[in-house]
Image (cartoon, rainbow, N blue to C red; front, side, top):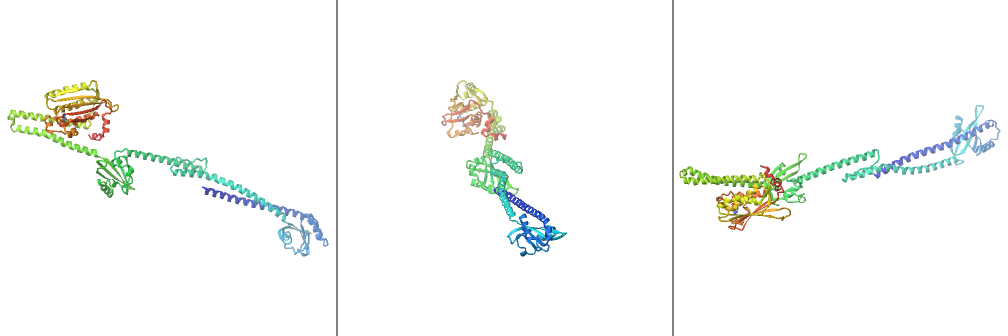
Length: 613
Ligand code: ADP
């Protein structure tokens, strides 16, 4: 910017200097010439006055010319010379005419002869000065008699002209200085807005997009400022849009359930979202810049990557990780191409399918178990029916006992199928619980009444201890199913003469606000070995297969109970001191149901399981 200002100033100065000098020279010359002209004019007038008296003088030969020139010199205040028509000097006021050359060829004389008047400026050796000569011819009877010449020194004029020149130069110098100051200011006025614009442009390039040019100029510079402002505005808008979409993208990436990792063409990690951090067990900072293949050297990931980069096509594969936890990941690798040709990198999507794989295993085990459980009664029924067909029918007593077995086994088959259906419905959350207030004492009495005949059959005493007026929110039928299942087990696994007891208590606010009810079903029966305690809620798990079978159990009861308790947002566990020391089943349920069944599904992460049905 400084440079433009200096250059502009210089240009102004040059221009002004040039025009000022030209103007000076012109005026100087003009004045000089006018001085000269007026001098010439006055000398000519003087000569013309002289001529009137001189004409007769020239014709008389004897006149004392020398005296006359002296007189004339006094009146004209200039040197006077008389020259004959042959060029001979007749008289001179300042010199001896005898010593002077012939003057016929002097410029002023030549011009006078030709034009009637002649001028000449010459340096006079005699006087050592510039002189002005003016000559006119003296006429008599139509012929030239001679010439009279006036000469005057130019000293005075030259002095005046010199003074004029000095004044002019000084004045011009002052003018020039003023011009320099003014032009520098004008140049500054031109470049200052440009400086402002440059400053704003610099700020914009430093990402300060809110910076604006503030100029009042209505000229092209003002337009430039406006253009810069418009550019800044559009930049600001674009940058904001990019930032917004970037943060939107980041939010999406970070809230995705699947892990997303981006790789460079060399296999370096350049981006990893939150899910990927969690799945791989490293923070993004630890992951960035690392080779993806180096993260889990032994997991088969590196081979997968090698294959991917070799074929540069989409790959989908399952990989098992053993750290940070056992995980089954479905890895999808999609190549990214630059301009549709060179491989630029890859997007790796990690999908945690551990639970899906686990569920698949559980399901296939369940199917195997169900088939096995179904096979037993079916083969019993088939065996006895065959025996009957082969002739046992003929013995009515045997036939009756066989038919009884067939009946019992089909009953058992029926129960088994009913339990399987019930369990599958409950597990897949296809049962909608209808919660309503249940008064526990009357509820328990009703259940006990239902169970009484079975207990009596085995001579087992039923006891219950339930405080009055405890209400809980529950699905009454399902709560009944829970109680009856636990009571039936108590009766089943307790020998004759034993006791099964139900005790219900309100647990006061042990953790602020959440009131809970504890239901304990205990018996004096065969008990459960400690090692089996954690497993009895599994499907088809029985401590003693034969005993469970003889009592008509399906091995699904406790499984169903556990699921129903969980649908009520409660928990259940079993306690036993060991064989023959009886068993205790403890159920804890919240008094109020706060969350509905659906939100619970989401919380547990069972959602995907359900959606499959
Ligand atoms: P089952 O139909 O065989 O009773 P459950 O799921 O109800 O199936 O019970 C699973 C197993 O837990 C039973 O086979 C039994 O071994 C054990 N069990 C359940 N309740 C009791 C109890 N009150 N006393 C002892 N063992 C029990």
